[in-house]
Amino acid sequence: MNTRDTLFVKDNDLYIGGFKATDLAAKFGTPLYVMDAAYIAEVADAFVSAMKTYGEGGVAFANKAFATVATAKLAAKHGLWFDVVSGGELYLVKQAGVDMKKVLFHGNNKTPREIDEGIAAGVGYFVVDSFNEIELLDKKAAEAGAPQDVLVRINPLVTAHTYEAVVTAAPGSKFGFAVDGDAFETVKDIVSRKGLRFRGLHVHIGSQIYDHSSYDRAVEVITAFMRRLADEGIETDILDMGGGYGIYYTEKDPHFTPRRYAYTVENIGRKVAECAEKEGIRKPFLIVEPGRSIVGEAGVTLYTVGAIKDFPGIRKYVAVDGGMFENPRYALYESEYSAVVASRAGEPETETVTLAGKCCESGDIVAKDIPLQHAETGDIVAVFSTGAYNYSMASNYNLNAVPPVVLVDGDRADYIVRPQTYEDLLRNNEVPDWMN
Ligand code: LLP
Image 1 (cartoon, rainbow, N blue to C red):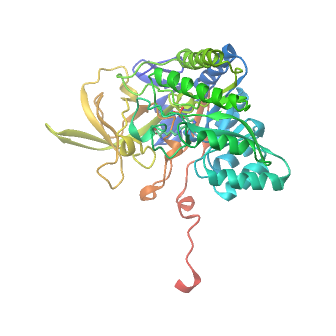
Image 2: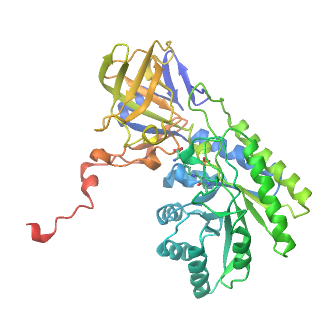
Image 3: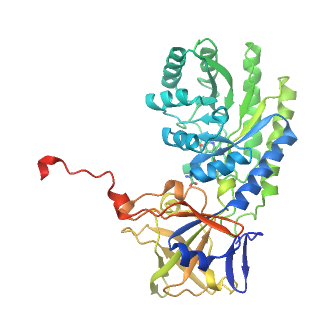
């Protein structure tokens, strides 16, 4: 586990903020997502101050990693911008009252309705990603009577070292205009349109990336492209380098601190400044879009142990009251996690167990073959680094309720997402009259 001031073990008990994990489980029930507000704030502040070392820029929280109104408000309070990728996420940031000028609307296939909603909401920037979108947005923005600021998503063809499902800048990716393909003509086309105002470029090379050289390479490619545009008299005011910074999940991973994340952004900033100078172009306003690194380690999921099945020499299953409906990442990516028994967190991990979920699928696993303290039915198990892409990817599979989320801030702990009821699960069900 990656301990810190707000995540530690005392007298054998796991603490999150000022709370014993077992007390949170007793009060709010399990499965339970617990989010640590202090950690989110600390990482946000670290990123914002790192950006100051570069100069003019913005740090946009990638809302897809963890989307709730409360955390959007918290992020806005700490000076973050927002990356949204659907009408739903746009609605969320509006409800949170964030400054729409600091919202970037992403998506490789925005629907006509989403384009309308983005224009009506007055989002700062559309990050355009297809000819179809450019055509529609141009027409609709011209009708609305105000040109829309746009960034253009470019695929820099830099393959980051991470798992395949989250690589976004390989040749043939569904995202962006290829830097060696349509990108150049696309920007020229946008510049010629009345409804659109070309403001800059966006690249996002993938997620859960540790290797910094991929970002360096992407900066080199994109600044060379900016030089090509400058030769045509096209200025790139803004460069949005996306997100993707890897976090700690297991002992195989580096132990990150907010300060360490800040270095990542400082490095990108330094590289952008250096390459801008080398290419003889103006230093752009720089945007970064971290998601996982802001909320990932802020999250801990608490479960109650139920069934235990031991197959000597094969595998010991410790089944928990969650599973792929609240954390689909093992099923999707064979993701790895670390965990403790919350009331024996200081004891050595004497067993190797597989935390299984409760869904009707063999692949419904939370963490496979992990070291754990001896667990018994009724124990509370805490799985770490579950703040990103767990709640935001949850579903009601098998009609399991999506667990509630509790935000812990020092000695306060409150729901930011209430528990779903059985009625909630059937809320949109209808039985047509003719069936009665
Ligand atoms: N910007 C754009 C345009 C993105 O597509 C993403 C993530 C981010 C920023 C934030 O990336 P982050 O800093 O969170 O790595 N569901 C996968 C991750 C998908 C990432 C999607 N895009 C997972 O659970 O690993």
